[in-house]
Amino acid sequence: MTEPHVTLDPQSLNPVEEKLRGPLEDQLSSALQAATVKVGQHYSGESVEQVTSMLLEQARAGLHPDIAAGFHPDHEQLRHVAEVIVTRAH
Image (cartoon, rainbow, N blue to C red; front, side, top):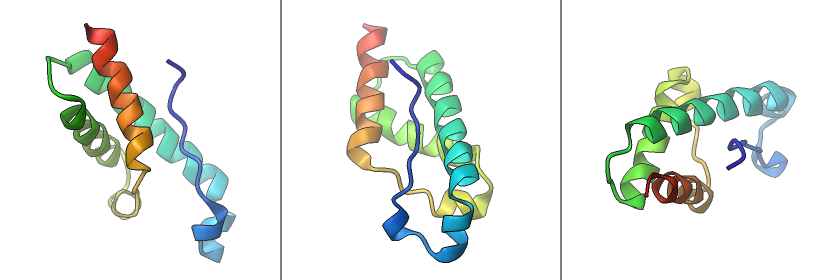
């Protein structure tokens, strides 16, 4: 699996967010990648939906609270990452 990467939709960003888009994408991607590793290492038979929730929770835990509050990744893409974790464990 390639490492997950967050790409922000420029149409949904305000001017300040647009100026910070590159570093913000890097920070979000880094938090999601760290969450993927941590959840993968601690996986113990949870369902794909549970792993999806765990990924989001862990990614948000690795972010500043203000950034975490605004982090709403695409559920289907996050679920795909969870599916890979579950499949690799079997």
